[in-house]
Amino acid sequence: MGEEAVSAIPIPLNLIRPGPNDRTVFDSGPLEELARSILDRGLIQPITIRPIPPSDGTLYEIVAGERRFRASQIAGLSTILAFVKEMSDEDAAVVMALENLKRNDLNPMDECDLYASRMERFGWSEGQVAERLSVTIQRVRRMLTLRRLIADARALVATGNMLSSHGLQLARHDEAVQSAAVRLFKRAGGEISLVKWTHILNDLALTSVEGDQGSLFDIEQDWGEKVEPKRLYTTGRQAVVDLPDWEGVVPFPSVADGPTGDCLYAYATQLERDGYAEGAAAVHAIYRILLDRQLVCIPNWRRHR
Image (tube, rainbow, N blue to C red; front, side, top):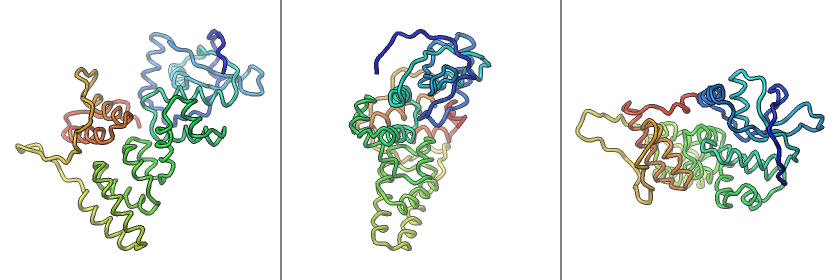
C-alpha cells in the first residue's frame, strides 16, 4: 500500500458513510466530550476516507476516524476535514484494523472478530494477520479462541463484565459446560477468581464427559452455594477477602491521574492486555469491593454502556 502526499480537504458530512468498522460499541459519554473538544479547539486529526465504488466522487466511506465523524455530527458541523485516498477493500481493512487496535477500549470480542473477519474475507492465515496488523501470532490465536464462546458468554466479555482470561478458559469447553458455567458466573455476580473459575470448569467438564446431565446439575448446584456472594461488612475490625496471589504483577503506577476508580479499572484492563490475568482479576476484585463500599465511583465512560 503506497503512501502519497495528500492534503486534507473539507467534505460534507452527509456525503460520508461509515465503513465496516470492527468497533461495535461507541459510548455516548466520550463521544460528547470529543464533540465539545472539536467545537472548542477544532479537529486536530482529519479522518481518512475513500470514494465508494463506483468512484464518481459523490459518496465516501470512512477508513479511519469514525469516532471523530460521529462527534462532528453531534457537534452540529456540516463538514469535516478528511484525507481522500483511493484504496482497495483489503488495504482499507488493514488501515481500519490498525486504527482500532491502537485504542485501549477495543473490547476483546471485537478484537476477536477483527482477526476472524480478515481471515474469512481475504483468506489470510493467522500468520498473515499477525504480520499485517503488527501483533504476535500468539495473541491472534488466543483471541480467536473466543469465537467458540456461546452467545451469553460473548456478551459478558464484550461488555467487560467477564475478563477475557475467564472467557478464554471457558471457550475450551463444550456448550453444556459453558451454559452451566455462565449461570454460575452470573449467580456469583462475576466475582470468581481465575483459579476458582478453572476448578469450576474442570468439575463441570468431568461430569459432562460422563454424559450424566443430572450429575452436571448437581455439580452446578454445589458450586452455586460456594460462589454465592456473601455480604461484606465494613464495621468490623477485619474483612477477609478471597484474592488471587500477587506474584508476577507489575506495580501500580506511583502517580495516577484521575479518580481512584478510573485508575484502578484502567490498571486492571492494562494488566489483562499485558497477559497478567491473575493480577487483573485481583485488581478488579479490589475495585469492586471499594465500589460496594461506595469508596470509588464507576468510571464515567462505563456509565454509558
